[in-house]
Length: 205
Image (cartoon, rainbow, N blue to C red; front, side, top):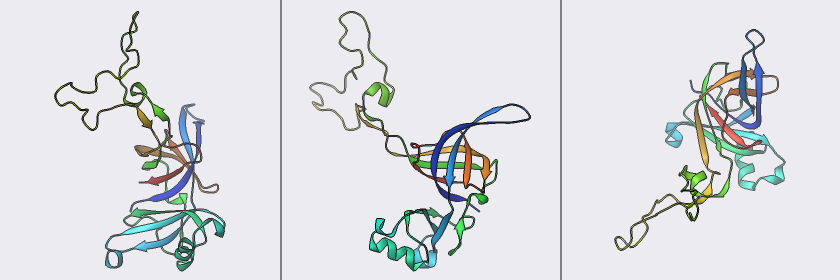
């Protein structure tokens, strides 16, 4: 059965193996416990999914429809609701999904909103090469030609140019669980995951 949980990226650190002395770079994710709000079925909803809540907040931080939806299923106010398609391990209404469903060595993918980098040029945004740096060069970090002249007398859609970079949803695949700390609700994932510190992430098997 698939596994899934919501968490918050706390940052990166290093873990030392006491026997071999090998250093492993890991991302620390504070994941769950996530109350199961609703289990959607094909008969009732047309698809299978499990809706999880994360990050408890005060009542006044939610709208009345949001509060009513959570109260209907006996769950207190939470900031975030996310649906995981298909059945997941521990996805039973009235219970909570915790990091205990994961084990060291599990392969996972982590989704989150990547770090926003603002307005960037083509060299940083699209990995363009720079122009010649000789005397008199006016093309050091310029993008170069973006289209033809008389025909078609316009710039085609989709030409890679300068613009806003980052701040979009990113999914990092091929990651592995290095360690599970059930007492402190922590997942240590080998490698880096998308998003800034304290950013919301979704961990799926």
